[in-house]
Image (cartoon, rainbow, N blue to C red; front, side, top):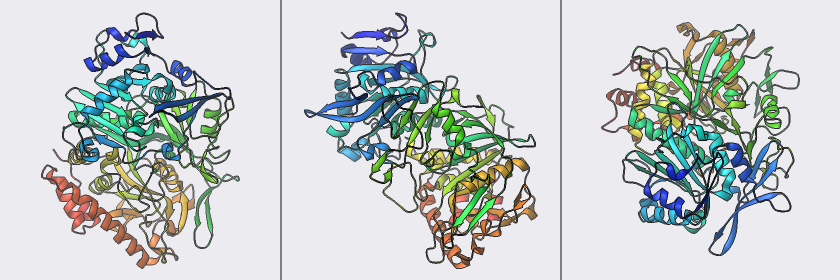
Length: 635
């Protein structure tokens, strides 16, 4: 029988909880079980056994050898974690497999590893039963509409449990009633990465009626504590007819007190976190619109005052169906309790004073990943650990609780503008690419749905281990890497969502490059400032021109913000001297071929007929006006 300690007195006892027999057997056999009910306690556990230099080594016996998975230390502003292996500093996109026999388009465990998961599941439980364990309860997706769950971790991996508790919340003793029953569980077994998976990140989803198990065989939170839980929510929504969107959301208040809510979707690296950031300014206060990669020419924009930003969501949003059948705009709420913020673009002091100040002096401990720190120092988000000499890690992160973010918006919001971000490479006559997008594009809903099916991952993605430097798809909704079921089911859910909210405006924004110009994330910041200032009012026909590439919808005939006109080069890339019509058309062909390749996957017999017509329109070379005709609401 194990010894059990609690953090909230005798009332908090796992023995009285409802749980499956196999989980109960693990807890009863474990040398000790600590049932935790606060993130602060997990932060203490994260550095419970420091060495004489102040580091807590998260190490495990692997075939008689001690292997250090992570080095953890206390810093003045929280807990800092670094991984000895550069590979473990970002998510492997091939980490997820399905360990059950329910419907899926994803790779099954048996197909990848040559045997069923059941034996490894039992072996995992046997290993956990020999460990000192920490467990806690949480509600994936939020208290009101989420999925009750338990986390079971080795006690020495307190930092991982701390990150999970921050991201998903942690239930206190008084919230765990006698009828609490977890319908999901996360089991953490780090050394199996070495003994069974050749050192690779592996996360196994094991679904059954009324229960969703997730087995995390690594200690980087991205694939499991964050995206693994995301997969649980996608599966839940699939069964109930709603979507957990991959997006950030911000309520924008203009200097004229106009309020607009913008939802920004996109593949990893598509600008979701950046949509919540204030515009980055030059020392003199101007915005650098772009720098020409051929000539070195630079263009600036004067913007005396930016809009006020009230953040709503950072990465995951619950989009439950409205009970009001006549509601013409979507409502959403945050699916997370904290944000997993990538900070690779903050490489020196002063780039984002708001986030820098918040993370230096937080009211509660933060979790820092891939930051170069010393024990008891202050973690600075622009000091990134190096993957190799002179090569900064491209994926430094900080986990920030929603509760400490200034001006955070709780509860549901109504979406006025729904944008999609794409990382784009430079495009020139000498090297034509798909980097032909303008500052922003306005899309008919039918075409906006196609962008959510293809979800280009795009150029220079910093967030994941990538094998493909070219254009690739992150899949339906851009959340497909985390989904466990079938793509056609998600395609149908998104089709209903996009076509039936008739008063939503859909836009497309590039980042990194517009033709030959290096622009970073400035296009989406300018689009946000401009669109918020004009409100959700529809554009007149004479304000928009159809783009030379129909997949890009329409672009503004001209654009001025606060009296400053934007050059035509940023609205019609084919007019750039370094690009020209011929290179533009070659880029359009690259984009068209990519769409055709990706969309054929969705021509399933179970795809809604309206969706089939939209895809066939694209495959037949449809024009923007054709997508207008296909953008009608459906049953």
